[in-house]
Length: 529
Image 1 (spheres, rainbow, N blue to C red):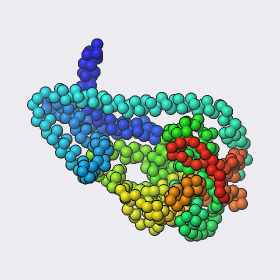
Image 2 (image 1 turned 60 degrees about the vertical axis):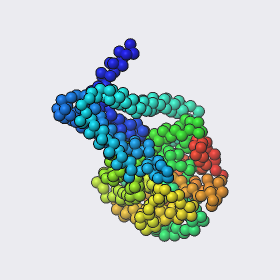
Image 3 (image 1 turned 180 degrees about the horizontal axis):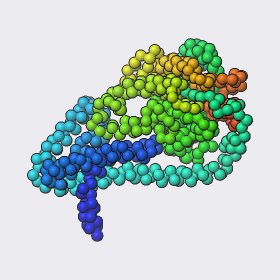
């Protein structure tokens, strides 16, 4: 019976192994980032690769009059063209007698010679290739099973997570969550839909609070503060983030609640952030503003930080572009710069361009042809590393080998912070001057900077990490109404209450230490200011 099944499977796999080998890298890449993408993204690349594979199978059948040989040649061609990235990743950094062999300089020519040699051997081979074909068949089957299992596990887990979320929403934490009756009892401060102001939420990742820059970096942010004061911003001098890492902070901010009220908390040492990523993509702020007629626009200099799928209208890089940038890393195009900028050597250029492009797109929003009110969430992946900007935007070479001293790291962080403050000033000036109606603008980092333990003790270091930057432009509002110690969980509670007449109210300000070993162990920080 087993033999019969093996023979049946061998026969069924015979015509399709080139196709399985061709689609594997694309499906595998998708399975690794499935939480970030939707299935329709696979339609274009899979249609293209299947069509090209079918074309070569047909061509080789005609040329060689040998079906088995044609299939084997196409399979080897697919491996040679589409699998170099896997080979490179496996041997990356490999050394022989102190010589770094695991680099494109050596691996790429070796790969080319290896598959050129095999190709010539197969091209002129007179012998039967059935044994080799059988190896390729079952290798292809084994490979394609890997991403399919990953996808199935993810979908199964998603069903389970949805069940848990339903239970949690009706459980004991219901009283702690936002009062839904308050949400609909509105006394709008904005008389008509046409009066709705655009809302800009500009998030410079890891931008430190100004007193931290003054005390530990010996930097007076008078130029930036002067600009903000002149424009009418309110700087919350004692603001804090509620969490010390992006994923927790964003989930809390955009859902206007603490994480333990958003999801069923996993084990404290869990690294499963998928439920939080879903909360970021389908956040309460997005739902609220869309219910008011806003167009929700998401700009990010790294879409894969929080995922691209369903986060909003991303006008910097489409989801297909993001997916292709990841998928092409497996191919022989890996060492070359190009349309998708996936060459390791170009990380500096990519990091710079992604940040600058985000600012550029953000500056174009007020004069774009987008109709109706807009909620724009711009996540700037700076001054967070990599440090690729000098104080005036000049290029800074990133070393992927040498570890900087803490003094060098602090200088690089400060220089990039100064440049980012200049870019924020430029774009904010344009947004205000070009907007038809005075917009609401929030400039707020997701958390502060992690100082080196050589500079401060561990407890103080964790405390400082939550000292984030917050500045608010609130047209028509009394500046005294903004709490100077506001935390990120209350950002949109405050704005919606003030401008839309909601009754969310402000939650108690609590900040938590982040422990990388125990991400979901929430230890409260005792504020020192």
